[in-house]
Image (cartoon, rainbow, N blue to C red; front, side, top):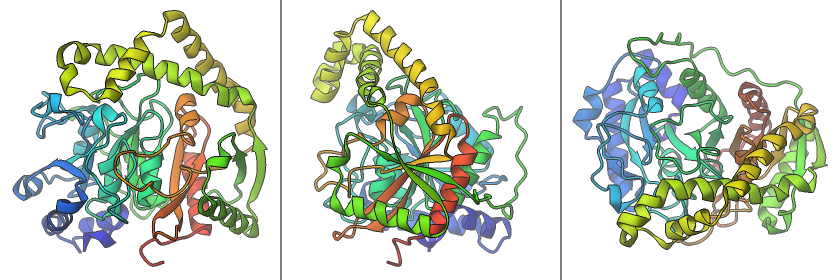
Length: 435
């Protein structure tokens, strides 16, 4: 069954012809047919005929990929999570989609996003308990990977929209450094903050996908395919130094989440990993006001024509976003940009002493209900600073819901973060499907 295959495992089996690519796509398609009536991870999906006819050579040959529904695809409608775009078929694929196609990846379907990647939830449910949110805004991408329908999905993050749903759904979510993957062709929220992110079931898988996407062109007539080397595994960081970060929001952390992190730290220290406790100066946390300024100001520009022409089709969330954004002055916006630039430099000395910061991805398990996707407070600062971040599952709550751990790395040192994450995952090995 496809639910038992990670990305690298599926690639190995297909490349060695131990698994027929068409049959694998059929299995994934059948599983989606079985789960989707309740899960609702996808807005729309390719037919099985289209999936099988889309197969082409490459490192990701016959690998079905879920694409967040704010990312342009010329063969499937891109709704941006809004009825305004319910019939919108882009003329071109986003560059990140072209990269996937050039690697042999297959567009399985468009995954549910909250409205314009903001607060209004879609219909997707948490695969572990349908009464709970999967998180957002990359709701469907996280849920589709967690359910085993696809081994790889693409999402975006402006505040916490990759890390949080990955944690809630018990998968690995990776937000690379700002601009590490192309954002063009993706409906914008805030150009100063928007990131492309990846969802898989393991650190090795997300590192493999990221490496391929980093070294492939979006232009089919110019790219050189990377060498397929499935036997060259991600090298662990053998002597990582971690900083367990205390935050002003720690009183919001559930007891189960706090215990899970402390247990993980104990395991790491028992294996010789250095884990120090540190604080960041208050000015970093105070800067989240500047992040909100950037987000609201830039989103107001993006959505001003929506409010003017389609106000009756917009949620109050987007309407309020525009109202608040339009009240921000250009001086306030410029000051926020300056703060962002200054803090990206100011954080360097704290990061230089360690390979990664260790923190939590969310304050606990996925909240009950589907009206909210949870709070991004434990992700926002890293999006503001553009630093790479990754989350992985480390425990289950008493409600049988995943609990995660987040690592944050140095700007543009994504590989080091992934190597460190592999070490942490190996030591804190936790199989949600076996526990």
